[in-house]
Amino acid sequence: MTPMKKSAIKALFLFALMLRCGDEPFDISITHPVNDTRVSGIVRIEAETSSSATAVFFHVDSACIDSSRAAPFACSWNTFVFGDSSYHYLYAIARDRSGETVCSDSVLVLVDNGDVIFADPFETYSLNSYPHAAWFQVWPGAGNDHTYVTDQVSCGGAQSFRLRGLGDWVRTDGVELNLSNGQRLTYELNVMIPSPDSAGALFGFFSLIDPTTGMICNGVLFDYSDGLIYAHGAVEDSTGHVWLRDTWYSVKVALDYADLNMDVWVDNEQIVFDLPAVPIWWSDTFAISTEYGAPGIVYYDDVKISQQE
View 1 (cartoon, one colour):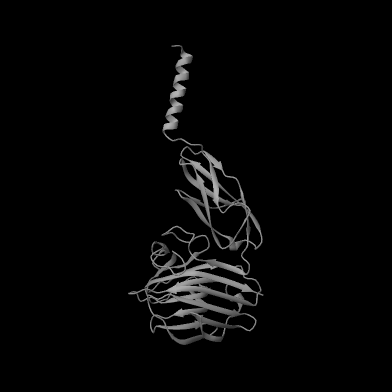
View 2 (view 1 turned 30 degrees about the horizontal axis):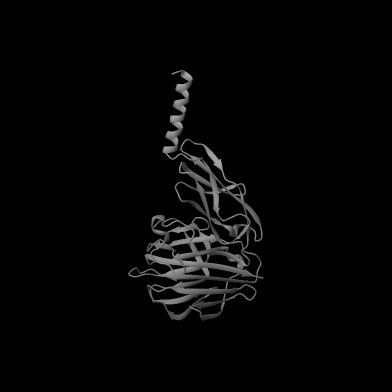
């Protein structure tokens, strides 16, 4: 057998071996969202690639927003930091075991949030992860190992955000809002405090007083000590309404910055009327928290904030 024939046979053998091993072209594509569609809220970007990929890097326009190190390759994108009715290109870059990279085709999407300036149902995140597409830690509480997205309980969907605080160190998480000079703002959320912990819940607009002290105003407190609901505006108001553990509550707060007052609804019943509120410039950070002095867990779900002129 000539050397040329031997080389040809060897090449055929190696090719057949590659086919048997299931080798496939190294490629990547964005599967969600699809090209030329409208997106809103916290969007889950999903990519499909070959089995040899070890990492995928997700890009919006020219910026890498996140990476994924294992299939299914996906990330969460906060569209609220972009202007409404703005177009953006999404693409992903995959890397394989040898360090080779490949780029997907771009997907063009239109951000369409209307008067909603933030919303998060906590459905786009991986279980037991921190919802870092929009949220950040203000106070650590029991730490990030105890604060994450969970499917143990939920209200509107399959997942919620679990916070765990300590008696002397609350857990507080916030999101920066793009507030305009609108005269009215409304926020809604669902909250549940389980048994047997002694925790209470507090949420609203966070303002840092000094490196170790902060306060939440234009908000609502589920007080652990007396089991009552309080409204926190420029002054505190005890509504006299009792809350129960292991029960989901739907809370809505309407802020009128022109007249500087706030109204509060719990489960569609208005329980606060025209409570004096602090001005809009006081804080642009919306925060959810456990209550100081009471260790334990609080679940939040379906946060939605809208602003009108």
